[in-house]
Amino acid sequence: MSQNGTLESPLRVAVVGAGPTGFYTAEHLFKQKEYVVTVDMYERLPIPFGLVRYGVAPDHPKIKSVTNVYDRIAQNPGFRFFGNVEIGKHITVPEMQAYYHQIVFTTGAQTDRRLNIPGEDLAGSLPATEFVAWYNGHPDYRDYEVDLSHENVAVVGIGNVAMDVARILCRTPEELYQTDIADYALEALRQSKVKNVYVMGRRGPGQAAFTTPEIKELGEMEDADAYVLPEEAELDVLSQAALADSSDRATMKKVEIIQSYAGRVPSGKSRRLTVRFLVSPLELVDDGEGNIACMRLVKNELYATDAGTLRPRATEKVEELPVTMVFRAIGYRGVPIPGVPFYDSWGVILNREGRVLDPETQEPLAGLYTGGWIKRGPSGVIGTNKPDALETVKNMLEDVASEKTLCPDKTGQAEIFAFVQNRQPDFFTYDDWTRLDALELAKGEAVGRPRVKFTSVDEMLKALGR
Image (cartoon, rainbow, N blue to C red; front, side, top):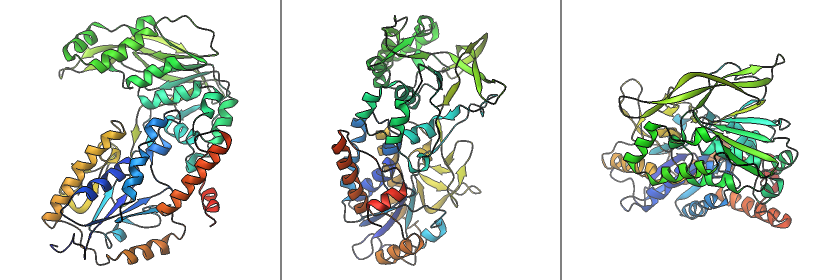
């Protein structure tokens, strides 16, 4: 094993998933000086960037500029991209083990967590994950049906995704036109009948998971008033004490902004976005025809656990909210990869500090690693994935030093390329993405938008003349 990681015999690493963690993993591997490394990045979709392209809200262009960093990483001569290649469909994990010393799974968290309440499967009850993918032009969701004829809509959840969904529902067509939102979504939202949007969290303002910029933006929309019930904006005694003890300035600022919306008099804008606190959905009530008639809510109160954290518990106060469409945004869940141990109750790959574990022995499996949301669950912002990837890479390098890697019998660059080409002739290279990127930007410039996205694989292949 000592000869691997040299110019003559590079350490060959496969990264499965082309989102932020995948690129940060490649960056850390290229930055270390001890070994010569090549990285082949595999992505189920034809083009890279994962969450940045298909998860970040279209009205947040500054966040998307992080792809400039990923572009630079992709220019490393040891980097290759194989897009439109699905692990478990075109290539299996055991087959990959014949070509690579190490494989890192960075596939993110692709599905939603459920509310587990009666009526959750009624028409009009949708996961926020799918709505976000739809308006961002994800190829799997371009034909997704979203009925925006409802006037009253609820978004259950109080994190950034919930705020993104609510904000997109409340933006004007003119505001959305200035973004890279998918064309079909722009047209559908142009015809939207939505007037009232409720975002709801089960705890109070002091525990809200959204970031300060997210709540601040609500007060800056062109044609939607932000509102908070005065009694729900006030901190309870326990939250006041916890905030005073922590001196958490970020949370203090969030609470200050939340309270600035309390009891606001409507300004005459055509839409209203109300943020509710200390409420939990009990049931989506059936109208008798399989649709939502309303949502039953229970008011919560906070109590301190033995560990000192503040948790919600239901009171006897119940109310009905007259919404007929509901988005659940209470968290993402990872999807198992065939051949990779999975911890189902957490929705993550079974691992310890990025090393994939044998479910029987709980010992690391040689050469298999993970990073990002599929490693730790859906927490943090995009930048959080950089130190997460570093932890995994440090352990990978330790294992190289102690010769705990896979022992591939086919390690030639040409062999790997031929193998992928044989299994999936329609794979995309990074050069293919660069060409598509230029075409999207040109299409956008022609109509006064930042970019116009390709939203289907067939469109992309046709644009490349294939």
